[in-house]
Each structure stands twice: as structure tokens, then as C-alpha cells.
Length: 337
Image 1 (tube, rainbow, N blue to C red):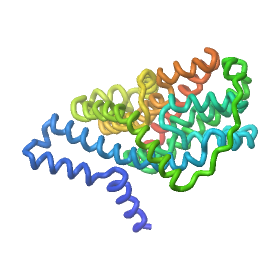
Image 2 (spheres, rainbow, N blue to C red):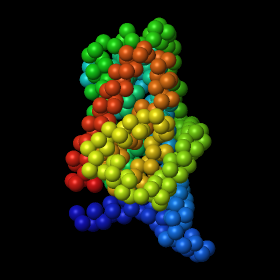
Image 3 (tube, rainbow, N blue to C red):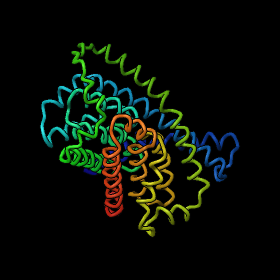
Image 4 (spheres, rainbow, N blue to C red):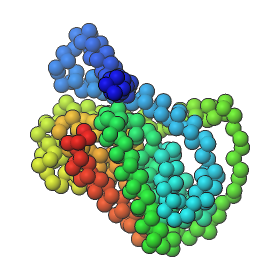
């Protein structure tokens, strides 16, 4: 058992977290004569380390996930979802959401396609909630910073929000609040061609390059904000606003996250810096969930597909779920962090 723990700790610290990379960058900066205790140097080290680390993880994850995704094109996903009914359909939809693109805006076109194909609206909303919130990339990235326990529980909680949220929308019979042009659009059921391994590898490479170009600016912005928080924002400020002494820290973190737009890769550096400064785990994770699930651009896009009442219900379900998860994580923090 001790051997397994040693192997896992090495994997966690040196493969996922890439501590060796941080040490290497620090050594290189020291070699060129920079003072590592200086705030500017510390910000530069944080920026270089996180950008390189996230880029490596980003490209690897996108390639792997895109390869998996090649087995689940929209036509096949619709057929899979169509085989299930009730709660089982919501669970399958939430799980399928974990192998889709990384941001909420990328998931909305698929949501529209599934709804147009006649799938129950509650099922499609389970997909829409889980897709940006708990993709496979989030699991690995969270493990690299917060450890396996936090990452797994985060994904489980996210899937629970997706399943319960979609089920509630289904029970309330909200189909009439979907815009009529979507309900009457229909879809062409085209069989996906059988792809060879080479075809899937080419597809994965193309998706990796395309997604990287879209995501990388947000990575730079997120890492830049994280570097500022890490080296320039006083720890007592973060503790006061998001620490254990503020019972409304989770609510504030959620509300702060809503207007922002980024994916999991852009929010990770900010979350890492906030946590290092003393923010509670639940507040940090609530911020991440809010940014990735309830960003203003994605809500504007979603409004084109659904009427205000359904949009408001979706926002209310996600917000309540995110806040509840945040407080649960705060309660569990002594046991899992």
C-alpha cells in the first residue's frame, strides 16, 4: 500500500502538477541573475510555469478526448440517448457531456441539435449542464492542483447537478418554453461513416489544433490574473472575502464568476492562486463552476434557443446547485484537501 501511495504521489506531483517544471524555471531565472524573492520575478515564474504546464496538459487532453469523441458524433449520440427513458436518459446524457468540447458556448449547438431531433428537453439540459462543468479535462486538471479526491468529488457533484437539473426541467414539462423554430426544425439522420484509426488520429489532431487556438488566449488571460493574485494581492484580502470567516464567500464567488467567460483551462490558474492565498475550497470550485457553466455569452446564445422562463429556470438550477456544492466542499475540506 505504501508503494502505491509513493507511486501515486510521484505521478501527482511530477506528472500532473509538473513540480519539476516549476523548479527548472526557477533555476533558469536564477541563472540569468533574477531575484526569485522579487514579486516581479515570482509573477514571471508563475506565468511561465502555468502557461507551459497547462499547454502540455491542454494539447494532450484535447487530443485524447477528441479521439474518444470521434466515436460519439451527434448522430450516434442521438441514437444512444434515444434508447433510454426517465432518469436513466438524464444520467447517460450527463455522462455523454463529459466527452464534448470544453466551453458552454461549444455545447449549445449540440444541445440545439439534440432538441431538434426530438430528444426530451430535460435530457438535453442534463447534457448542456454537464458538458462545460465536468468534462474529462477538468478531472485531470483538478487532479494536478487539488488532488484526486477533490477532482473525483467535483465531477460527481457536477454530474448530480446535471442529472437532477435535467430531471426537474423534465418534470415541469418545459418543452413549450423552447423556441418553436427548434422544435419544428427536425434533423437529418445521417449514418456516421466508419473511421479508421488513422482517420480518428487525424481528426483528433485537427481538433487539438483548432481548440488550442480558441482556448489559448483565455489561458494567457487566466494565468495572468492568477499571477497577479499569487504575487500582488494580499493574502488577508482573499481570506476576508473568500475565507472561512465569510459565510457568504461561496455566494460571492459564484456571482463573481457568472459575468466572466472562460473554460476550465482559463479558470484553473485563477483557482490555484486563490486557493494558495487562503480562499476556501468550496468558494474556489463554485467560482470555477459559475465561470464555465453560466457565462454571459453562453446565456445570450441559449436565449436564442429557449424562452425567458426556461432560461431563468436553467440559471436558477445551476446557481443553486453550484452554491450548494460550494458549501458542501467547504464542509468536507478538512477531510479531502
